[in-house]
Image (tube, rainbow, N blue to C red; front, top):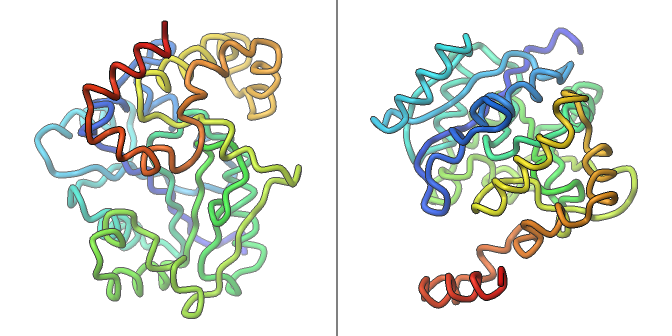
Length: 272
């Protein structure tokens, strides 16, 4: 099914309660968003790449970046990410839509292809394929692909705020309604809870920037295995943001975050 029309949607916005404007932060001289898109573009199966941002004034910068780098983009609802993905799928007449968040600048294009290939090779058997339920790849290699028909059904049926904000929960929480498959890392190890390569905190940015500075100058297409080798060679890099490792770290520490001053003091003591 190589003729299947795949559209990859990268959801991006500048507003973030934890790390505002994180997608604009500089990585080796370019915005983090662009460095990430460069990696997605190395995927052989990702099809057309579209940046989906909001219509908020603060996201004008995202549009300007897309124009500067000649990228397709769509502007829609700030909080209804499900609608953003659905509208992009309709706009580009997609058969299947890939969802990749913009906070994964170390994503490996081979991981992207692994998930999409499973979907294509089994088309039309699977409605939804991802590598997140359960996750096993290092956190920040998040890939989900769904039939346009499946996305349309979710868009019509999903009502809860969670389902609209996070695009796909209605699909993977209703396995009785959809035929779902999950891709595990071939190592049969779960690195998702021990390796954090996504960005929500300042330490995440320092970690990602350091990895790029170490690997990008000599090997721009570095893989997840190159990153793992680097962390083995220089474990101090791994430690930069290791305290946040674990997919649901934030949710599991809400009690601490309710008292933000106390939380900040705790982080400062850990740094000392």
